[in-house]
Image 1: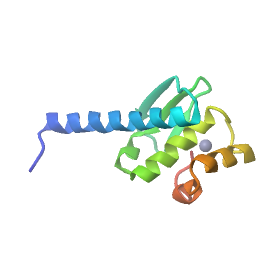
Image 2 (image 1 turned 45 degrees about the vertical axis):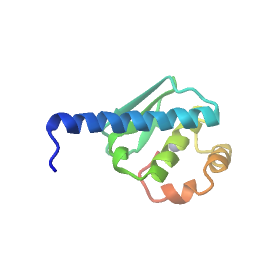
Image 3 (image 1 turned 60 degrees about the horizontal axis):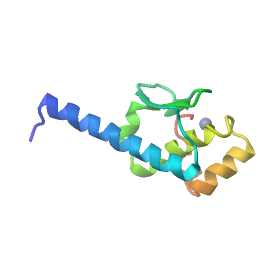
Length: 110
Ligand SMILES: [Zn+2]
């Protein structure tokens, strides 16, 4: 069955809402509060966060698996605490996502 344009749009909005819910779920777990969650088209990154705590996610993430989405979300949320990729960052990331490095390995930079 072919979806009507309006249905496609609804579906897309729904996917974005679901993704945002996941971001909030992990925010509670990690105990951080992003000041804003956005979706953008990006060429070289899966996500980025500003110094003010706004996180932008690559819109293509919506086509990825839950596992991959979660790893990217956790990665960005930890950046709200540790802005670089230091040892501290890595150990925090792995404590929330033990197989996270494997999931993200070889992917676009974050
Ligand atoms: Zn990063």
